Image 1 (tube, rainbow, N blue to C red):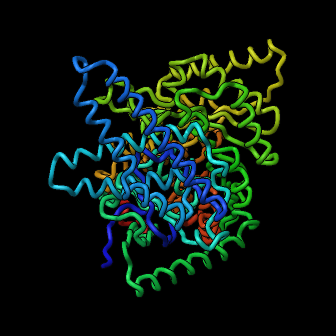
Image 2 (cartoon, rainbow, N blue to C red; image 1 turned 60 degrees about the vertical axis):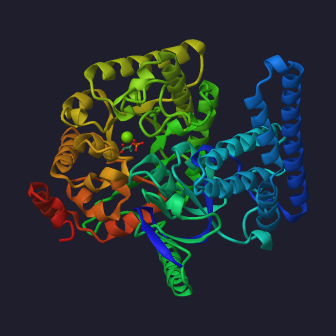
Image 3 (tube, rainbow, N blue to C red; image 1 turned 45 degrees about the vertical axis):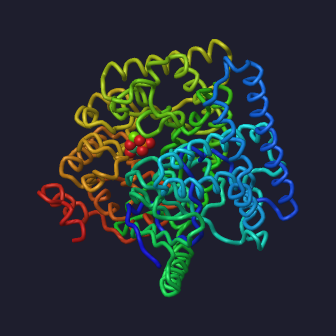
Length: 583
Ligand code: PEP
Ligand code: MG
């Protein structure tokens, strides 16, 4: 019977496909399809790993036995027996085979998929002893995965795609309790056409990456990952924030129609690619792209962006088990982005880890889980705490600037002392390159305004920086004390709260008065519902995901900024600005 769950609409469009439930702890397991002729090889790889694990367990059992009866560990011996039994369990082995043969999943994916199926059955058991066997099964699967990690598949990630083989010609959607931004990057290469998570807010970084992938997504869908079962048919409505499970034929037809309408709309918008973004009263508006990886430059150009307004460099630093990219690796990545943009400017933001962008899956430092990472050692604070690491990044950016126009952007500054330290380090990085005779380029220096303290001290920033970029995602979070990643308070996350609008308007006006560049690079810039207001407040430079550029351009082409200016002042003075947004 069909039913639906509701969450937050974070990335538009409709996806229809079979559910793949992935446990958050196993998201880093490779997910790809194998070709028909590779199916046997995958089954063999799994059989080999299983046999290896069985041999390991038997060896441990033998050594326990050799210790003699006085040192015997009956509990451990019994546990190992259970593990041996689980290794041979028919439901596990047959199930895994099913996913490989019928669905062409690679061995690791098939194994973790079947683990999820069985784990749910354990969860429903009344008997606490049997329920606890789930942990044993997870350990056994973990051991098999560990052996398989040493024996990689001959097939590369993401090579065969659905549609190339009739056996895998079924669209798949990902369902998970949670996904970190680093997991999302991995999924950029993957086979999934949409995703749903139980947790997450509208401007959480997971949602932001989903938008950059331009696939329908719903986050904050509470218990979706519990209610949806492996292989269920699912509709993800990324416009309404609704997930329909096991849809009826009528619903399928209805959503199939909406999906096609969306495609037609995109096709229509694509014709605007080469149209200059100029308002009815002749104001030229700069539309820039937000990117996470150098390769995203291709999409930015394709969407008609006139530059990159925000390259979130932290994505180069994530999911690397603590091993950070060195200067050379970063330089190569920034250079690729600069060259990819073919002479258009690239704004590289220095690393912004922390808050909901942990370096690795283990989000917090041991023993510090009572702290709030959004208020902790994040962004520039993290960089200034490790000057050697920061200098390496600054040198890499300065070197990349020798290959094309680069702007250097610093996140989350709030204090004059932070500004001084940052500028001193930029100066030192320049000197170091000069002393070593390494080629570097000239960069424009910019600061992000994303903390209320910064928005209230704009003259200080204008004294030291060439341009400002308003990070509304954090500016809203910190002004309203709303965790942007927490779906429980997402209804209070209000981009048009009068306090937020005053900080925005004030920043834009002061930049104009001083003749300095100002843009907005938070999600507000790519939200078509906000375009008129931002234009009315005087904004002329917007930075957003490439997938949103054409829709925002369409709005711009219909606007007259002289009229919007007066209306925006009314909105700014209103007690409830949201009520005026549709005027
Ligand atoms: C912002 O805060 O608006 C911003 C653009 O930075 P991020 O979303 O990466 O924190
Ligand atoms: Mg930010």
